Every structure is written in structure tokens, then in C-alpha cells.
Length: 342
Image (cartoon, rainbow, N blue to C red):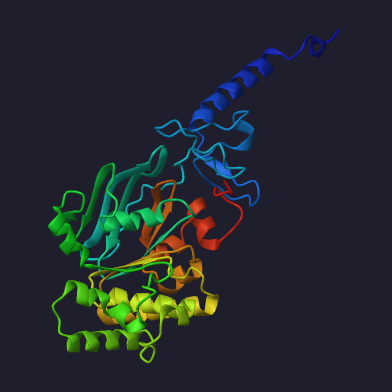
């Protein structure tokens, strides 16, 4: 009977042992993953042949299950795609800063160590999937919500630590365009736009008329001041809300999904209007949106929010050229990637 009938020889055993040792070492050190659909490789996740039998379940501090990544990426950690890169936004200072901000509503953790800089004199966009806390960010900026932990600074001042009278003054730095324009239904368009001036300043009615007329003309509503909100189209209500956000000459203008409910053409026109008025007035513009075409059209700075933290932030051109799998997937609208339906 030959040797091979008794199993592998000594050399084979030694070779396989060395291979097993190498594989065991590689298992803990492996840092490349191949997308099963595209064949693209990237850091962080284990390859299919080395994955555990079941995905790892990640829990937040309340014991809630953190939604997994999409199939093919489910063995990556919940924050494996969040870059630690610090990019220079190019501005002389930050208009708004979030410093390790945590916010929960009951057991629902919305912001989980958020760090974010909004540059001065640029149009910034905060992008991200639904339910990731984008609108919650806006409410922290103006002091409608306070962080459970961390700090929010506006031009270097801590919003959570402000006295009430100082917070009232700081809020005058802001103009806000809400999703639906948030016009008062009982007032005509002129009075809606004039409301902040009459409420917060001692300007004469002649001055109020001059400012309101100028702002309405800027947004293409110069001849519509007598109309009631129910006589306006969705796009007109957005523009009216924009005019009202500008009447106090704010340093910072916040836009909460200004493209919501608009068709692509009117979205493009609104983006052009935002860019045009920003070029005239300057200041920090912060736009919350899902619309990638809007981001390509007007954004100078982009911050991408997911699972309560910033995945990546920086100049728009750099993010659109990013190789980060999540950033690439979201900014191209691709179905393949870490972001799934859950």
C-alpha cells in the first residue's frame, strides 16, 4: 500500500498548518471588502468567506438595535463608513459648530456624537437619508432644542449656555425658510413678509414698505403682495417664505428642504434664486435637502449625515469625487451600497 493511502504526508501537513496560521492572522487584520455586485473593493468589512454565520447585532446606549447596513455590507460596524478625515472648508471662520452633540427623544437616539462645522459666507448643504436628524440639527442651531450632551456654537457663542435675552438677540441673526413656507393664512403676502420687521424692529411703515417691496421683487413676487397664501402656488409660497427670511438681513439663513413638493424645473429655479441672492448678500446659507441635483447645482460645502454622525464633510467637489462607499452611493443615487431600505 502506498503512502498516499494513509493520508497526507508530513510536508503537506506543515504547509496546511502554515496556511491556517496565516489565515488566522489575516482574519483579524483584513481591512478590504469586495462589493458583491460591482466587484469594487474598499476598507472596513470582512470578505464573504470570512464573515460570521450571522451579522453582528449592534446596540445603542439604550439597548436599541442599530439598523444594519444593506445586504453585502451587514457585517461592517455601524460607523465603519464614517470618515475621520478633517477637511479645510476654506472659510475664515465657522458660522455654526456642533461639538460632540448627543440628542435622544426617549429611547430614540437621533444625534450620536455629531461634530460639524458650517463655514461662513458659503452655501452649505446637510444631506442624508430620512430620519437621520437633519431637521433636528436646525432646531439646535436656533435654540429650539438643546443637546443632551455636547455644545452648539453660533459665531463662537454657546447656544445651550445663553441667557434667554441673549438667545432672543442671537435668533435675529437667523432667517428660516420652512418646508411649506409657513405663511400666516390670515395675512396677505405683503403682511406675511413684513411681519418680522413689525415684530422685531422700530422701523417706520415707509421703511417697512421699501424693504418688503425690494425683497418681494428679488424673489419674483413684486406684483403679488395683495394675494393671500391660498392663492399662491407651492413654488410661490416657497419664494414668499424666502423673502420673509431675508427681511431682517440675517447673517445665517436656514432652508428646511426648500425643494420639497416642487417639480424639477421649479426646484432648479429656486436653487438659482438661492445662489443669486447669496452672491448679492453673502452670509452662511444652510440647506437641508435630499436632492442631489440641488447639491450639485449650488452647494459649496456638503456634510453627509447618517446614523446621527457626519460620514464626511468638506468642499462639494471633494465629496462628489469621494471613494467612500456610502458617500459615493448616496451622491450618485445608486441602489448598491451600504445604505439599504431599513
